[in-house]
Image (cartoon, rainbow, N blue to C red):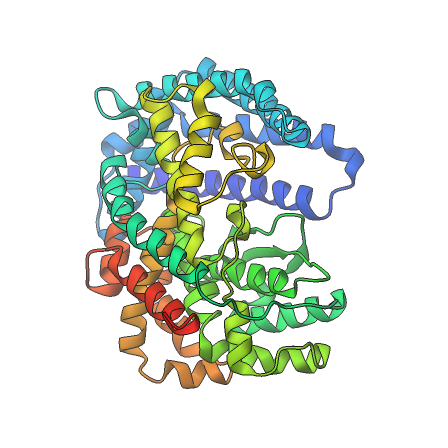
Length: 489
């Protein structure tokens, strides 16, 4: 046995335990009886302690110093393990414990303050979370930008400066497109009540149409849809709304995009660092291209229109063209998770700029609500009406997830790039989608991106698939063309 063999055997056990920990989380959101919450917290804590101890085990450092890469796969595995080991060992155990304790408290405080519309009650604990994350970032970053150290947790290799430049290029055209759309006549809204059982039946049909494999997965209901697991066990959840079946259908397609990435990774990478999506941004590119460029396309919505009529009868939309416009209707709204394609990224850009300023010290926590409300009014043209529709709407900052928000828009940017290459490679794509057949599209994504898992860096993953350096331009061109057609701009 070589040092590399010993390291990988140890790592596979760590990866397997991580999957078990993830399954505990899935169960808590879907199946666990409510009364089990205190015990489940103990179980989560025990697993977290075991995993943390393995990740800082001194033997990992010894194996890394001796291990040799015999091929590209071994080199990538060593790169991932070394990055994780070095990052984890830089953070004092006392700081990690204090962060876990404080974010647990902050989450509970946030939930109560959000219900009470009480920003002032949340700010003291948020200040503590920010301080601790800044301390962690300083420990990891050394002399580098602290925000970059936090961002690297979710998008390895990205920097606040590079993302900031990309987002600065996105914002003017998004603001202008939004204003032009809302000055135009809006498409018809969906109305009526839609049976839950019929929604879930069609939801499963959509999952299968996008290549989700139920032999290695399952679909359950949850309050907040998510995907969980990798390799041979990848599960998704969805939700229903009696008056908004699109919530169910597009939540399902979105989570199938995440799940298809995990199910599509080469089996050789199972239970290794390469056996999962390489970054949050690349992961989001898969969910977004499935949901938007494919699932909300004119061709696919034409097929979906027929499926909905079969499931629900006449639901008041007079034809496929009108249905396409209804699916893609742009509405005023405060909530990021409910936003349409045009406005979604404006919500993310707002959060990115504010959290970056918080970590740098340019924005004080006590001034956060005012800064949020000013920026929202500038980009969306109306005032935030209450904190739960503004600075208190997202859970991320209470959990210390600084650096997470920009990956949502990075995913959209990457999806825009992938869509251009996909359509060049599959010239008859719309004919396929019009029949509800996504197989050529999903096969291209699996062959050119998904199968490689974490083999390459996030940027190199997109470049390998597209042959181009990622840029915001394809996303903007796609949005302006699509919504210009719908709204006759």
